[in-house]
Length: 409
Ligand SMILES: *Cc1c(COP(=O)(O)O)cnc(C)c1O
Image (tube, rainbow, N blue to C red; front, side, top):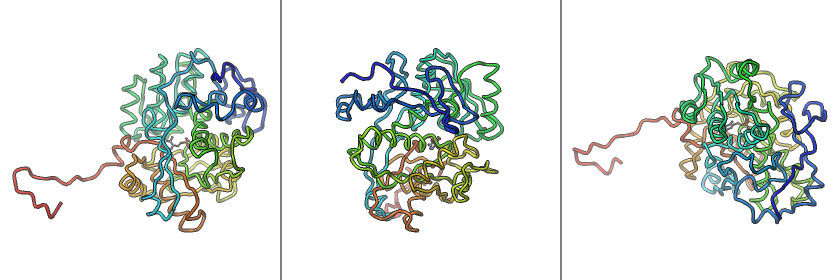
């Protein structure tokens, strides 16, 4: 079976009102809210089976029929995707879980899962012959966008809060982006990108302001299903900022279910994890609101989830509620501790955002929200080495000029 030669996209759809929108043109928001990509799943079911995947490339492009781009010559790629799914028994034992797994996105290009979304969005920008892209970022999106834009030969404009982790600032510049520090939060940066669009032209790559980053992130859900032999786990813990990862995965599970590719009807419970220093989604979940209020004085060392207002808030809350999961916040002050726990017990390069997820698993096991023998998956969305500030610690010295007292090491 050859990889798709034509797109199975039928239309785009406004997420807020279900309005049908034109597919093969540049779209941003509809009624100020995000847009879904919809596919002809019946046609996909007839043209490809899950066994056809076996001979395909070991990256996210193996799911071509379920992706918006089909012209191979337009794809901008570093071979991203198919990240390892690592059984994590030591960390599990410490937390009190017998079937704990980490899906390790730290190994993706530019060290975070952001590469999945950017692979799709920049490929689609390339499809539309766009020459310049722009985005606000609080962390990893800027570096990923800059790298993909460089690979595509596009200009890239990045605006980030001045306290964005320093590696994220450097990488955006090193990948050739026009990168700027802003004395504000990501929402302020977003406003600047929006203003600049009129002047600079270019494609707004902001989280959920174009339809395709969700489709890239959806592949995390497709991979999880395939890696577990087409049976989904009981619970997924996902750090939530703008929410594309969680929304995308939930969309993947619906599509797989409609395709008939899942061996069991069981859907995982989706847990949206935030720091108590910035937890707008948790607050809205607890208050049973459809939308989240902007979170005042947002603070977190986990920059990827320091998003005080998410344009797809209702989509995150819907996925969490439909899946009978929860939105959970954990103590900001303990994120570093959980991050080190995961790193030292499993040797996985855990980002602070995932540190928060480890804390959330601990909390949900303790209060009985999830069971000890549930199959639990934590997404490690980024690499620890991108967070010099969070890793900072005092390292003891050894003096080469005096005899070492080995009993003290
Ligand atoms: C962006 C980011 C997140 C949050 O992702 P969303 O899908 O936008 O909610 C989590 N972790 C890391 C490391 C990130 O870079």
